[in-house]
Length: 585
Picture 1 (cartoon, helix red, strand yellow):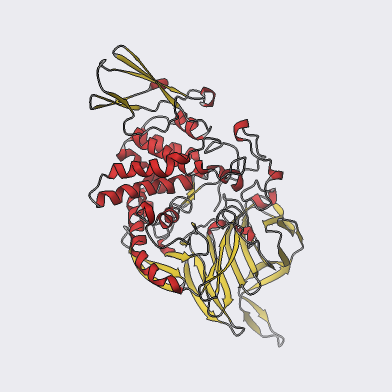
Picture 2 (cartoon, helix red, strand yellow; picture 1 turned 30 degrees about the vertical axis):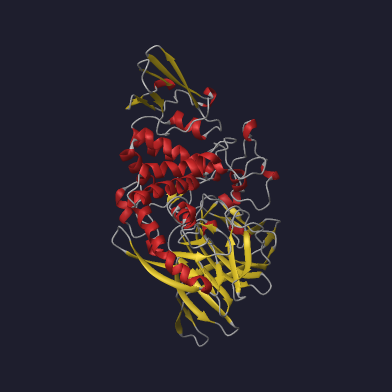
């Protein structure tokens, strides 16, 4: 599953948001522009057979990749982290059943089988180049099997700086996890490491020491015990999936089962894989997790991966949105926010990251800000259930967890291509919280502009463009969505252009400020912002709510300016409910 692939060099950003040139990026960053040979193919299917060996912290496996050629190429390029050595590469071709003469001359039917042809390859520091021995033509299907092994990168600070985590359960048994959003799946298997190409489906077979369970995404297809003291667990994902969304977990897991009623009428299996010492905690927490599912599907549409089920996997690091098998490493309680925010956030990514996916990391904010914003909506929901003020709780969540963390240093959604590290970190190396919190506050302002009915309909159509897609058995709505697509969706709901609004809030870092001038009975309002950031013909025309003697007035701001009559002695407040994302001024 692919979008149009752009083979572009990185363009220098404005001085306030300078990014390191590509050659200066860390060697394990994900989503850098691809070489031609990599962009020339579309991944349709990955089949990964992997042995995980906690005794010496190594792995060994074979990755079989099914590729469709979209541009002629005589070579393939896979990303693969430096610590992993490649022992062989073969090209596979299926030869179907056919008639042949045996040694006696009798005509017999020979069953179909894969034929294997060794291929020449060059192991480069962070990649693998495979010579095909001829030019593969557009439309041709190519299947290659890559055997590799080694001690994979160890995560120094998972999940923010990722790789493998080799930990221990309370009983001393191995507890292993993988988190590679920033690094890409090439930290543990050969892959095309760019967000614009998802495999249509994936199979992961994990071989682990007996007594342990290997968990991956999707549904468990089979489990077998091997004669060498290992067990193999075969998992299959039937929906398109990003490479970093594929994961593996190994531990002496206990399985806690439940079901979830989808709004489509299906009963979806829910499994919590948990360390035995926390099993009771998992049973206590699971009903809340199912409530998270129910809320999110009411808000955004049905859980997208019903065919693959839903798993929560106890991980030796905080969390990650691995598709249909999210990582959960928190404390099994609601905490000060009143709900288990970590599970809620990672689950929200099933809609915003896994269903709707940015084709380039420059649009990373779509994943994170919508997952964050959903937390505030849920805080309001819980308050309403308790008989409290829903909007006060919603705004209180924004005030406490989002507004204090705004940085306004770099654009939330730059126009130039970006790799993961360029978006997740600011030029000084600090975490870029604006792709989470400023983006969430931007959606808060859009809610004011559109009104609840249009706003929530736009969110749902952003997840599922056509209502009929909500009832599809598979993930027909799985697709790539850019910032421009988000803008177009909200413009359709709003009925007018939002080009200037998206440009000022997302394409440059400075917050707009609101100038208020009172001259007698007339009060004038004017937005101040970097005018050179506006596209030609666009306007920053966010309306402003004003309260005059207890009466609310919506002041439209054509061209960024508006006015209203306010009696001299009237009590007067601008933006009393704090809808507007703006700076001090």
